Length: 266
Image (tube, rainbow, N blue to C red; front, side, top):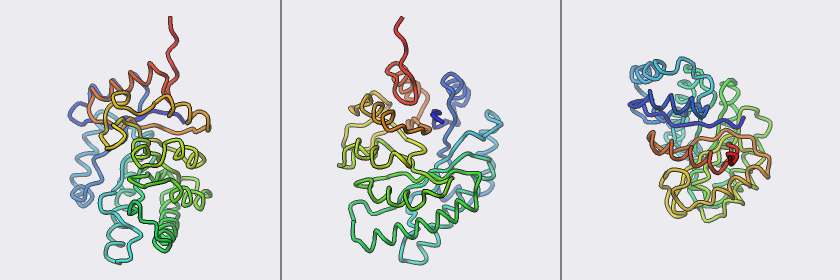
């Protein structure tokens, strides 16, 4: 699809919409993953109405689903049930809005590689998200790497779910490069399963969400790897605020960073 996405700012929607139109961007909403919103139907409708005044059709848009403290593979039945409820609530909102997809996190304990823990994580996520994908066939489900230390476990889940058409990986490239595992390994390993990508910049140590091109990430390497492996994914510029987003988009256009093509010199 190769479409760009922005995180909309409800307080600055006129400029956000103009920026989106200039670069042909859709939106990824970050207003619906907190418990206070998930439990408040009135607040949800208020947010939806606010966005609909500026964007009557959400069909190309996505949202970030519940992820804070969400552990659907927990051995504690109360935690597991609450986590699954939050994920289902997210999908209900996406269905009501007619969104294209929802992003969730792996929820793994980063660096904990006990075989029993990893097998349980894979099996529970496979069964739960397969059922969820079947219940919401019109919405894509994207599983994002959070602070996972390497891509192999996520790739294993994606391989087992490769027959589920509306499930895929959201590669957060900024998370990948601070994991200790090189970014090229993440892309090479997950390439067959990547349907969505999150990008922003950092110092290779912390998840800073800086504008693209303002940190030290090698964006030419990112671009060449994505194109080399034939990845056809939508891309969210995951920075907040009009100025940071405009700066990111201008940098990407100038340097031809995926999914943009490099400007021809006059």
